[in-house]
Image (cartoon, rainbow, N blue to C red; front, top):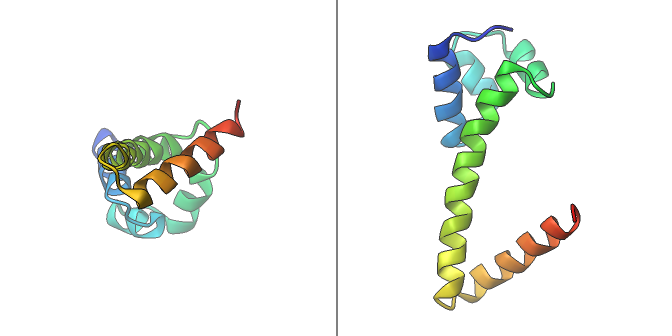
Length: 91
């Protein structure tokens, strides 16, 4: 599936806003099944655009959790511990 620059930008922005993939496909007037299939293919245009937005949101969310943890929030500290455990699996 080839995405235009406009479609790619739309996919990224909707993924940033945590819109589910089938709704993104409908919004950019793409075949839902093909879109979702390509989302699972490493290196595909769809996957790259989607994850650019998703990761940007993930970074902002984690930054907020880190800031909250530094300010003494126990729930945020617990989330930080989970982040460390997840990361440790890759190290």
